[in-house]
Image 1 (cartoon, rainbow, N blue to C red):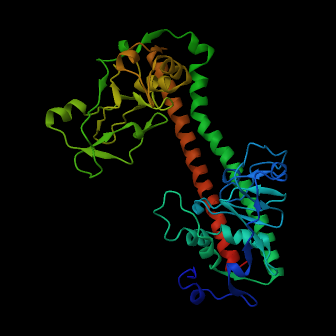
Image 2: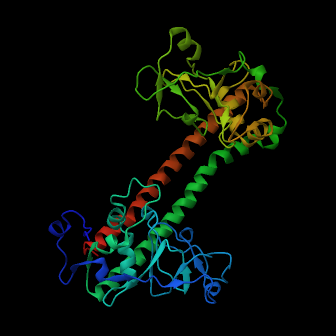
Image 3: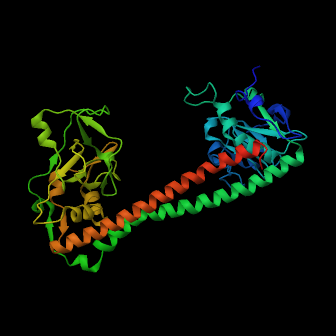
Length: 412
């Protein structure tokens, strides 16, 4: 049997005094006590499947309440508060749990029983570290449903300090990871609030009592010409030709100039689909929540547009394109789209002719421009807030790996 080890680990890492390198099998063993589904005890034990264990944190997502007899009718393994539960199916999901109750689990979860001299909390954190996940996935990356070879995993060399030191390290990690989880939850809540800001800003304008008094005109009456569908020519990421804007380049009313594809068109076609600053780009087909995404072309890059988009060119003396775009993206605009979209298998669609009928509220042009400028400032501020929180969340998500590296390098 081969020994899984991190290349060069013994040579590169000097363990603190009293620590030693051991195989994982010297610290724990597999406890595959079978619970027969036909037995009297089976329906009395709470059942855990992999979906009940949260990735990375090991949090058990199911209360050990009255067992549901319909669950877990096949063979299961018994477990209790003395075990570490290790999810062997798709080990990259990193599902390692510490139950505090008696139960039974799917055979895709292996109950590990710590041996004398090994602390189960220490073992759980060690199993969650990235080095262990990488070892479990080694030579299994091509499989759609990879499973850990438990014999190989138990041959993994691990750093094992004295028992008191294991308990001390585990206690520190429990405290630190708890703080990380609280910080993550707070950041995620703030991120959701930041993501909700654009819709709230639009709602404050277009659902206001004042907006209800504005006269309305069909979108077609505000446009220089009929809505135009984009090019259906195949694009590629080569960088040769003109950028072609696609549905993925529209987010929250703005054009994203990343993940671009390019296209080379005959001169006549190029001029036909070339965008002009102020053009309104509308996503006409996709899943229901994505149909209707609209943005104004900012003119910062020369570009054409793809066939899943419709271009509406607003006559500047009739309406402000930024104002019209904001209305289409608002809850009011969404209601019209949802009521008029055509549904097909797997996606929905809305045509240019249907969009021509959309009633657009029209305060005086100078007021449209003022409102559009205000919304643009608010959206820019919301975008900055969202990005800052996303960066904070990314830093928080990197903390557990850093803390585990320090712990198993003897630096806590």
